[in-house]
Image (cartoon, rainbow, N blue to C red; front, side, top):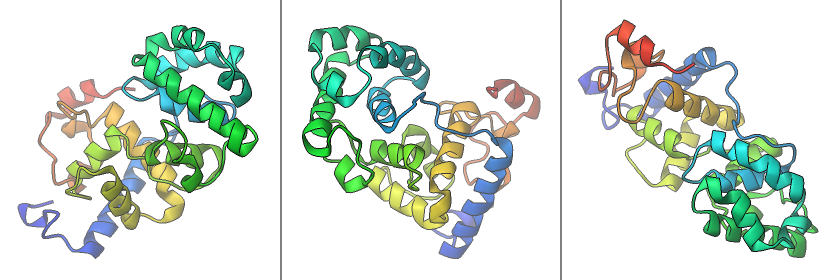
Length: 235
């Protein structure tokens, strides 16, 4: 894009077409894009997503097997000893607050939803520790309901790609969602997250190895040498 093609100068139609081209290019680059939290049920995904706040999916995946082995469902976790849960969750950081959240949401699931995770956003966001981001992760990956996941990578890339000028997650969710077909929201979120983790890094993106550099208004803010950029890319 040229300097004239800033988000302000770009028409809504042109931005929509560009966003869809970018998504198609990222689909080619990351054909295996998926939710990187391990889960076998909506309950496990809900808890894992709450635990993923301010830590990595890798660390959560190392922690949840012990948690779910001991507390396999909402009823079991709701009745748990908080100190024992805290000890299991300690590696994830902020373990006291996270224990309060996952035990609280478990109690709510038991009391209001017969221990089952509801499949509607308006119900999910009433649970302790669950906001729209978490709700959309659960809906998109456990229920097949399309949703935009405004995690840190999606927020950063939406700004860099000129999809939005806002840092408000709700605004970004709405503006990004308006650019893409609803059926693609969940996978588009995964692809942006994969790209943010593997190529478009926060401090220094690997612009010279980016498959969408020609469509990105921020291209050039990172490493532009193709060989050096390629060496930065994470498999």
